[in-house]
Length: 424
Ligand SMILES: Nc1nc2c(c(=O)[nH]1)N(C=O)[C@@H](CNc1ccc(C(=O)N[C@@H](CCC(=O)O)C(=O)O)cc1)CN2
Ligand SMILES: Nc1nc2c(ncn2[C@@H]2O[C@H](COP(=O)(O)OP(=O)(O)OP(=O)(O)O)[C@@H](O)[C@H]2O)c(=O)[nH]1
Image (tube, rainbow, N blue to C red; front, side, top):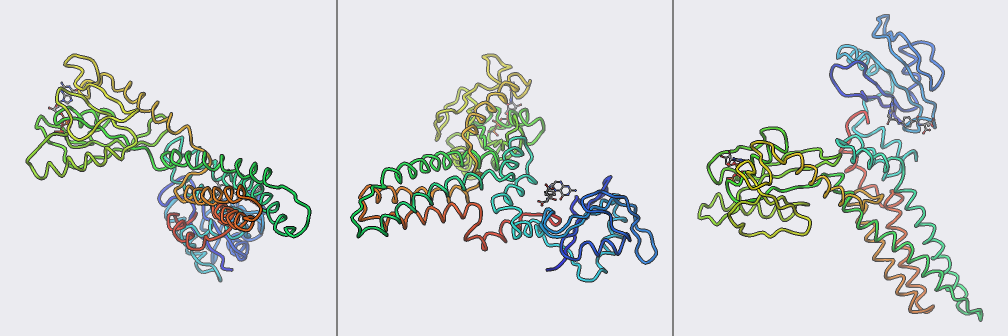
């Protein structure tokens, strides 16, 4: 196995830069720079010297094999965070025998291969590094901590017990001891099914927490949508003008509303039009608005062709400064309240999130549900169908095992690790 190294902290000037090494040669490589090695897992100050030239004064930490992030022997050099220091130490390591620069995500890949993390935890780690809001941070940390694996293990134990009961009836089918295992198998199966169904529903909410909720502002031309978007976002993201039909493309602004990641969409004003370009803009507005998680209808006196509010949408009058209540992007009246209202509605929707967070997880759960439903209906048909019931249970088990990467994951790894940065 190669020994790999990479800068684990961000590139550029910083107080401290962390260089990470992992693999059987990592301790020897550090010894080559700092002389006598510090005791394991203890941050120790050392002068790093190469060919008689001092490179830096650094904190050195050694991790023994089996007791590191990757599971391999590993080391960290906490350097002064300058470009020149990092470059000098990287160059010194490049000259060491058997060392090479790590590929993106390679430390984490080794942690996975050595059983330090399961596949879902690796995904949680990727999400934690990407997290920009409080809800994303909490959710990713929960996944990194192994919540999905623990839940999957509970289901697995129940299904293995159910499968064992069914197998017993197959093995003893010829004997005259009729043991009716169906009630216990059904109880186990339906308990798991209820959990899985709740998770599949909650998965949608968790995916929204992870990717962000979309909130579309819609209304007639000149209703004040772009002005409202700018007021909500706190910056001039969209062009505003007194000319009706100013916004053509959908304008997106990322926001953090009460810890939730939200993408606000400003859309073309809705009206009947002969203008072809405006028509394209309106069609885009309609399709994005329909797909959005929440629509804010900015109401004016004009009617809106092409879309009706759905349950839970917000309807509010614009240009409140001209009288009549509502919200005004121009003066800021009602803006804080509107943000609060959007947050409340999205928090309600995010409340159903369970442990799974990605489409991949939800598809695995849905596969398991389908197989479990077939298994339960075979069990209900009686012992003659035991073989079929057992086969369906095995399919469900395999789907749940895929959640944490026990099976069928090789093809997923490259995709997942391609999103990692070097040094992770
Ligand atoms: N300096 C530094 N900070 C860091 C990391 C790191 O690698 N280095 N991390 C990197 O992501 C995160 C912390 N995660 C870590 C996870 C496991 C181990 C580790 O040494 N695990 C051993 C020992 C466990 C123990 O002592 O309880 C093991 O699992 O056997 C270290 C860091 C965040 N901060
Ligand atoms: N008095 C008042 N005028 C506003 C307000 N919001 C926008 N306006 C004015 O209304 C006109 C249209 O504003 P926009 O924000 O561009 O409206 P829009 O709905 O995005 O328009 P389209 O892109 O054409 O669909 C501009 O002249 C704005 O200055 C408001 O809250 N109060």
